[in-house]
Image 1 (cartoon, rainbow, N blue to C red):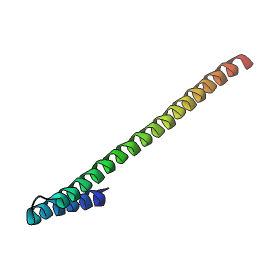
Image 2: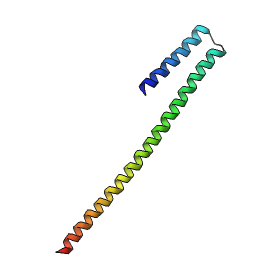
Image 3: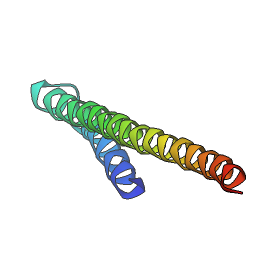
Image 4: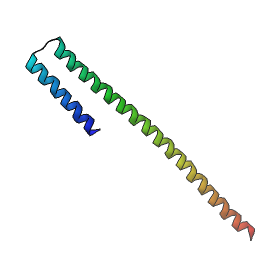
Length: 86
């Protein structure tokens, strides 16, 4: 992710340099706008992936909690059965 951020930083620096050297015209503004649109799309996709990853981790956490509760219930049941066997 850092490399991608660095790449976008270089692209933004290029677009600013392009506007400074060539002036404000349709081509330079289009290049700058295209770079900014790509940056926004990249940020959106990154956040979507983060949300999907967080949802998957939450599902795993819930399954683990259920498994632990069932294991604890089995342990309690085994303790009760041991007392009644004698």
